[in-house]
Length: 118
Length: 106
Image (spheres, rainbow over the protein chains, first blue to last red):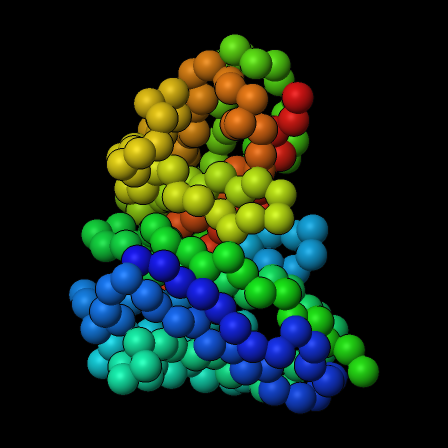
């Protein structure tokens, strides 16, 4: 299984960040959750949220009011929308597969840099 | 949220050294602790899950231990390719949280 993020690299302040993660080499409709994790430049990792192929989601409360994670089974993809972005949302955004039992992230995309700037 | 604290934040070592990195959780997380290696410009790679289970394909010089609140990652004999930043992550409760990272330098 491989993951690949895609989306705009530049987003205007107060706009909406939209990213897609394409899953290849396997079906998104397996017994896995699919996550988004971000990393501001030079800083640590922050879990954003996750989705199951049924559409069930879990979000980080710190971002919950601004996040929507969706699954697109026909395209074998899942997506992230983050609204009302500020410079603090500038980061590398990774999609990852959640490995159970345990809840570790065993497969990661290469990451995509998103800059919030006018 | 459960806070994860790694120590040290940075560490200088030499090839062949034995190195230990510590991760402490702000409350008990049983064995729901995972370790990642991240090299510059790359995504993190899972090394160890469930505190002590080595992911298939990861060299046996890596090992993990601990339960409850205190955990360690040990590299028994450092190789040149091991110089990277290491993160712990708790998957015991939402939201999942990471330690701040330990940069392992030559």
